[in-house]
Figure 1: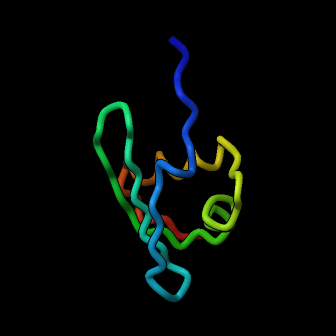
Figure 2: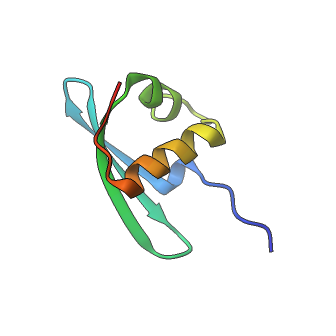
Length: 73
């Protein structure tokens, strides 16, 4: 069985103001979720502001959310 690609639909984003975003990641396989707050404009533009984000950017955002890292650029 081939692993499913991560999707932008696995995430929910909430603008917290001043360039900060809460990012919620939900894993459909495990039914677990994680969240964090980011301020990394590069990652925000690559994922939130992009209709079809690159897998590498989604995976980076997933890693940040799962670790609970408060990301800043």
